[in-house]
Structure formats: structure tokens, C-alpha cells
Amino acid sequence: MAHPRCGLATASPSRGRRQRTGKAGSAVAAWVFAAILLPAHAGDTRTPLPVITPAATGTQCVEPPDVMRRNHMRFLEHQRDATVRGGVRGAKYSLKACNDCHAGAKTRSVAAAETGFCVSCHSYAAVRIDCFECHSSKPAKVAQGAAQ
Image (tube, rainbow, N blue to C red; front, side, top):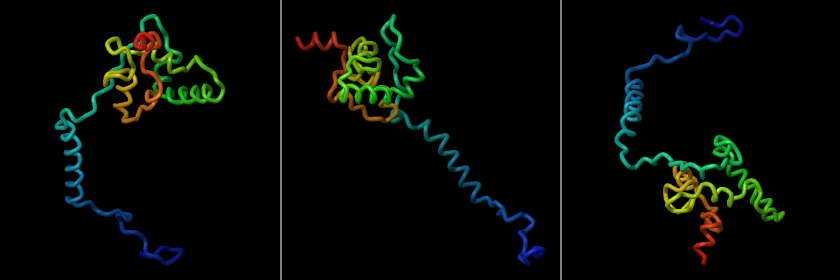
């Protein structure tokens, strides 16, 4: 049947869609089957969920937890720039304040063990943490005690 305006043939009754055969459907079923069963057989190779250690009792974080999870890197970068360029130390988003509240009870650090406050989430998210290549991962009191 020709199109009334241009004389071109119109699409078939199926409106240009291909009819599915069993081959494509079985390939999709195989992928779905594999996606469901493979994680069950992954065993210990899966990354464990992060272990979030509670902050020191009687303290309140500078921002709500959901804001900190989403934006902590921006806060730390802004603080870094203010410290390096403007000499502003000990402000609201300082790394020192994070260490003082979130250091683990056993390690007294946020990055010394796989279960450390920073390391556990960064490992889970596969994000390299490079703050502690230069900075101490321990609270000031613990770091001073170790230096003596």
C-alpha cells in the first residue's frame, strides 16, 4: 500500500517491529539466570559492606550523616584550600576534628585497619584515600603520646 502523499510504501501491519524468535529470548534468559546465580557463588571475593564505627559519645558531627556521606570530600577539599592558601587552621571541616571523633577504639586511628572509619567506606566504594600519606590518621592526643 502506497503512502497517500509521497507514494512510499507504508510499514507492514506489525508497524516495522520484528517478530521475536526463540533464539533472542533464550539468550536473555541465560543472562538473567547468570546474573541471579553468579553473585550467590561469588563467596569471599565480594567486597564486605563498610563497618561504620559510631562517633565518640557525647559528640555531634558538623553536618548530618547523609550530608557528610555525600559531601565530605568537598568539605575537606575546601578546608584544604583555605588552610594552604589562607592559613586557616582548625576550622569546621578540619581533618583533625574527624580524627578526634571517629578514631577506632582498638587502633586509635581512622585508617590503620580495614575496619577503620575512613578505610571501610573507601574500600567499599573503591576510592583511593590519600589524605593520610601526609596527615596523621590518629587524634592529636594519641599522636602526641606516640611521639614521646
